[in-house]
Image (cartoon, rainbow, N blue to C red; front, side, top):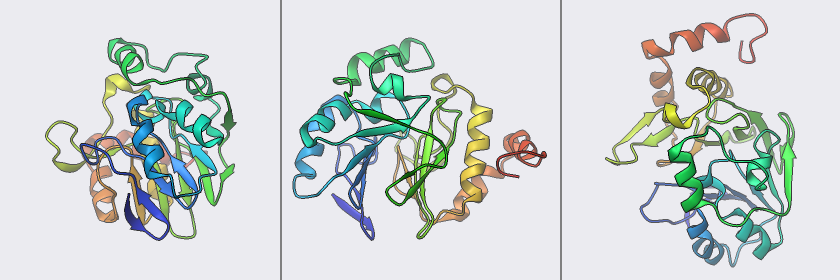
Length: 234
């Protein structure tokens, strides 16, 4: 495991940064695919783990959850809108060939102990921020005291195929709504994070790059939406 902050580790994987899992204090955030369970359990052998917190119900983020939860006797938590998928009671959304292929290749055993979360609840020192768009139940876990944010797939910091480091949006064909996801990114920005831990790509510490990312012209509609009365980020 690689330390990236006080009490914050990024778990090793190959290729590096392709699909991430993090240990922050005693909370494991995301756990990659079913094939990652042995490696993750080996890396966590000397570390106490109280909870496995899932950012969203795509199988590259929770595929190993059933095996890890059973081996370490820990609960799995995720937003209530994604809980049925993580528990194996419903398919991941959106429907389509790529998601079906991902389920077939990445999902492991379903989780016996899945505890649904709602916005504003806490997991350890982290507040659950509902950030829909990529999935209905996508969340960011945010720790206010030091600005650590585990952000799943609301954006990535590396191109998956070229491995070029840059900020990018999740694929539209794997998302419920790109416009809603953009509003969720703006919600994160308003929290003023200082260390962002994405699901794909290296950790982000330079928030100036996030400012530049959301200033692009195609973000105009999302920015305008956040200015309307009653907006979650207004």
